[in-house]
Length: 238
Ligand SMILES: Cc1cc2nc3c(=O)[nH]c(=O)nc-3n(C[C@H](O)[C@H](O)[C@H](O)COP(=O)(O)O)c2cc1C
Image 1 (cartoon, rainbow, N blue to C red):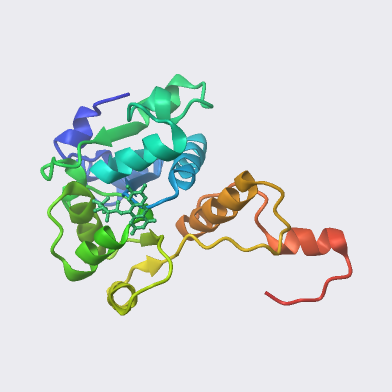
Image 2 (image 1 turned 180 degrees about the vertical axis):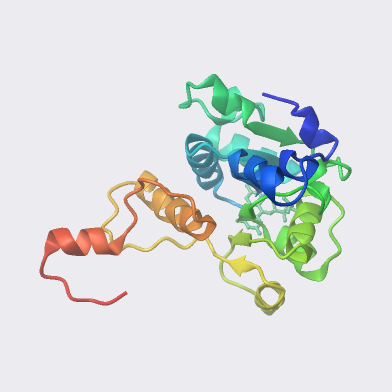
């Protein structure tokens, strides 16, 4: 795992070189950069699969996990340490490890807490009702919620994958508020029309949806059009 000193001090290759010309060229060659927040809602498998897919797609990922997020990663996925080896056991490439930056949730001075640190979007997956409320009301005091609020103020994509059921009016109002502020509320709510055969298929449905929202290409089998083409006879519009 890299400490990526240039990230820690907030510098960016594109910014350092100036706007346009050489600066623009430098900006274009940096990998796409995303922030992934993992909070204490059920759905550790979603977070792990999304992290794997983003790294495999060549993206740089800045990860922040809340205390309850760590507990869920352990309870649901057996993750004992939040590090590259434990989070990404299927990824062999050392280059991928260099593209994962893990920030302590208490470190509200980390680069992702600053709007000057450029990134291409943040996902909170899974998002607890607690983190949802903190982000929606602008009163979060940890790095995950701070980074999400900064993402909103900078008008960058913020995808909030809330998990709870049923919903109280408080959750619904928080989702409404976040939507008005520019976030995309994308509940962990897999469809069944692709005829999933395993939990992994359901996980991929959600992760594919999030990757689509981030405009990251993927090979997950999540498209109705592909199924419909194979089936040939289906005419349902989705
Ligand atoms: C095993 C377990 C499962 C949980 N599942 C959910 C859930 O699905 N949704 C939710 O909103 N909270 C859930 N919680 C409660 C949150 O973890 C709790 O509200 C916590 O304060 C969230 O803090 P965070 O947003 O900082 O992670 C769960 C807690 C535990 C221990």
